[in-house]
Image (cartoon, rainbow, N blue to C red; front, side, top):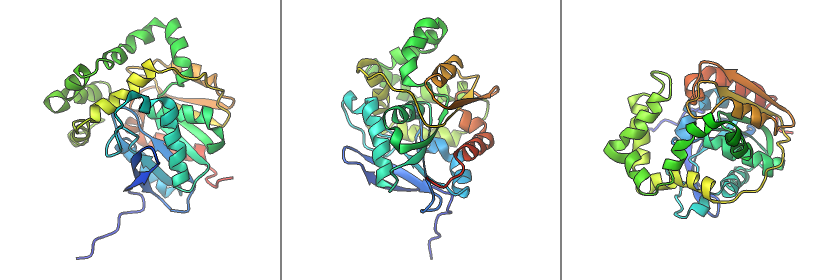
Length: 295
């Protein structure tokens, strides 16, 4: 029996050695298309973009979607220093080079958005255009929280995530019941199916997986960072205003770091904007990243 080839708009995964880590990377679309890298957030993986892959691949982009370090089937370094924003951003630049793209389009959601902001600030020569979904620029977060106590209250979970061992056990107990409940309770009804949650739970409960995922938060709190320069390339921020964890003011504060930026609000969307408004998000990204020919 002849095995059928995957559709051109379906992700085909391979291992990509970046030197320091090896990532599990999905790819779709024409091999000669302009490279568009999509970065997922916590607690997802490359699967977090599955509703955008097809439309963007059919639009002519070579869509690259990694499990970022610590997630999915990618390597999971043990020390929190391995999850500093500088190293997460370096992974993105190295991934672009490994795919033959010195310059690329870049989009990120949640933690993937923080990494995308960092790449744009410190490696602007590699980013043609930047799109961010419900993620603040790391350079404005501390100052914003000092002046907005409501955001401090929304961010208390980050403190809980610092409790090594206890946080892991609580989040993964009973087949990751707590984390499943968190995704369902913070999204619109029906956003995540049981099959979606089961697939994620298999990733969350792999050996060392949750510790690696939480190391992103631990590194963010404990390790010093440089002050970022402004973001110079054209930037689009897509923001669900019903985000449970992030106030809309974070988007406005992030925009002030951009030389050329625009916010598009989604009044009825939560933090999980690309799942809840898949067609609108895909169309917005396709429109913003056109013309797709790389300069």
